[in-house]
Image 1: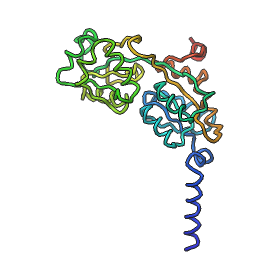
Image 2 (image 1 turned 90 degrees about the vertical axis):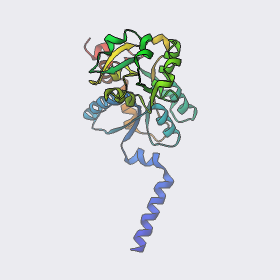
Image 3 (image 1 turned 135 degrees about the vertical axis):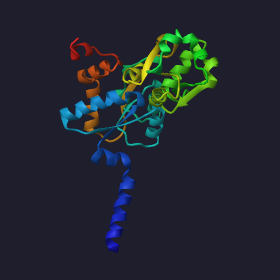
Image 4 (image 1 turned 120 degrees about the vertical axis):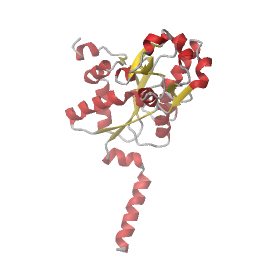
Length: 268
């Protein structure tokens, strides 16, 4: 019994020495780190990929900033899909992507939303009236300190001259999906989220679109991460750039960047 216990301890020691990336690449499923705003649409793409190939892909969704920090800390992800160029740059500067694979995959836009059971769109009129209509409530957004949607939101509200009027009345959330949930539950009268999140929710109504020229372009860069060769990761990365996935992204409201495959794939 003692000998078996020693052998077990030795095996654990070897695995720890090898590291999580090597073990994951050989034995575990391919792990994809993706921005929270990609949750529904990427899950659809994964389901199609797995049905077509029989290969397993596991997504992990969170704010791009949190995912980037996890990658830098050694998380065994094989693909990173960020909602912001800054956080992909952060990972690339750490030498943790395969730079030749980096692409700008998707685009998006920001919208102001309110709970679906209200009449905010009729009452608000335009964005300039937002501070007056918040009342005692708060504006739900991604945390502008690090969440991409929050960074874009702050840029837009500053450009529109509204930031100083709402800065003390924010409900900054850990990712944009949590900001959406706050509005869906009626815990915030308004929120600013991605148009794709608003379109996928039955719990909110879109009140207004924020001007796209009021903030930096919303770009979702994607890249294979450095580490052991993973054929499944390569295959899935090719898949998300192909016509089937591009059609899924397009139907969800994303802009598919740099490719002319959407019209053909979606029968347009």
